Image 1 (tube, one colour):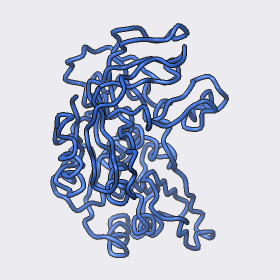
Image 2 (image 1 turned 60 degrees about the horizontal axis):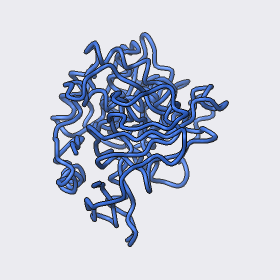
Image 3 (image 1 turned 45 degrees about the vertical axis):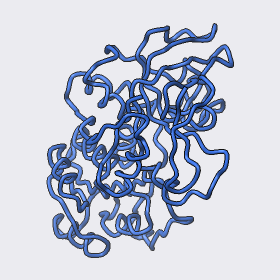
Length: 341
């Protein structure tokens, strides 16, 4: 079968690899229908040191169950399923607490199993996969695919920042996670949603999703503009969806006293540059999203069309052209790229 490997910065190839197959009785094999390129994939794409063995890529995918181990009970052959961006058993104490990202028997997609390919082995299939009631050719596949990561990550940022009815919210970043955070803040009842971004096509989409204002300034100027829009206070919640040092610094500058900074962008810095916020009672929260804990909550709204996170996909490529998809996202020519095997 064919799959995507990254050999170093800017070096993405599609190669033949061993077919996905069952290894344990709790495994499933899924034929991939759609996958995508994540913003977090761009960090190694820009900086990965050469690796002669290559690294399998892809942690967001939807597929059809082709085979199951004898102990798999929750899915059967032919089911269309979502694979969240980590796999988990669904039974350990962390999973029962809704923290599947810390599953005692879980793990991350990578060598030798990953989603940017024709098929994948799914460890802990019962705890990982979510069956969805759609056919293989459903027009909803892109929207459902966002539940494997970006929509749930945006939702996590809003939930951990305690966004609710009447909240004021700043979203830093107009990428797919930031736009998903706008959707999440809107559905949770935020009254004011300020989107910080500089790409008009993206911020226009953010307005469609529920952003009430757009701030194009960055850094101190951006934080000052947020305060101007909020009577000088800043917002109750700041959802940091980028992961860079300037983004987290802006978040602390834009948050209201007593508010929450939720960071869900993969951090590209070693230490949090937390200023003196002790007297302001500002809380730092966020972290990696336990997508598996959120999928059922968001699924019906996607199926009903009440939220349309699939609109973040603005380009589709075939698997053989995935290197061009990486290039387009890295050069900001595409917001998020859908991949069809």
